[in-house]
Image (cartoon, rainbow, N blue to C red; front, side, top):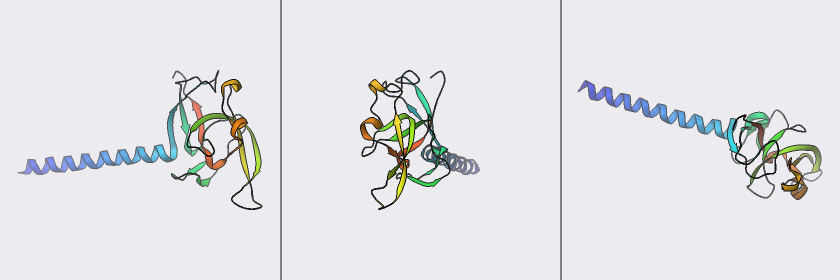
Length: 150
């Protein structure tokens, strides 16, 4: 009888540990860091298709899971690699910050915000800010770091 109780306690405890690990991984992936696979040839020669990169989502602030930032503590600088969501789309891409611009905020009259002009390293095969314009900070998902050897 005592053995059954110990088995149930063990299974219940193991279940709680597994749920806690899954919750922690979800939180880490949502707010802190993620891995991404490079698609296409737009970042050649530095990054090629199927390279794996580390996306540090907390590099610039605490993101809202529904989009945008709850709290900002830093901003992308020129030449940094970033992961971003293409304006008016859900497509995620990796590009390099070419310049930081001040642009009008159409949602708030007389309010200006920073926009980021993002370019691919391979200008002949890149769809980037030359095609869709500057990207607002809320579309920047995080800073990208190549993982050597992948």
